Length: 65
Image (cartoon, rainbow, N blue to C red; front, side):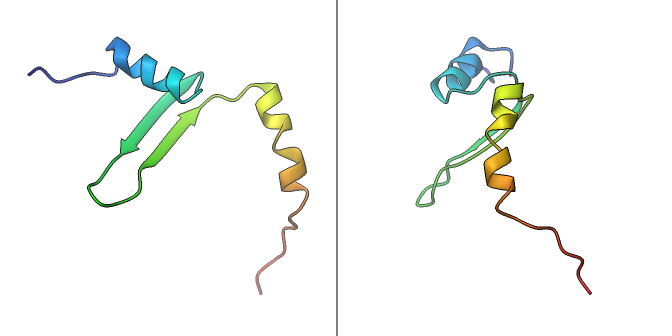
């Protein structure tokens, strides 16, 4: 069996299935008996960033002394 590279169409299909767009990096970890972990890096658009505003407003940065 040949190795699959990031240029293989199946990689794009996985991103599509997860609803991810403009992905620069995707790590899919499925270890036996453990939870599945997905780490994705992507370029967000303006609408994606706007969704963060109400979440970030719940927090306050404070200096650690």
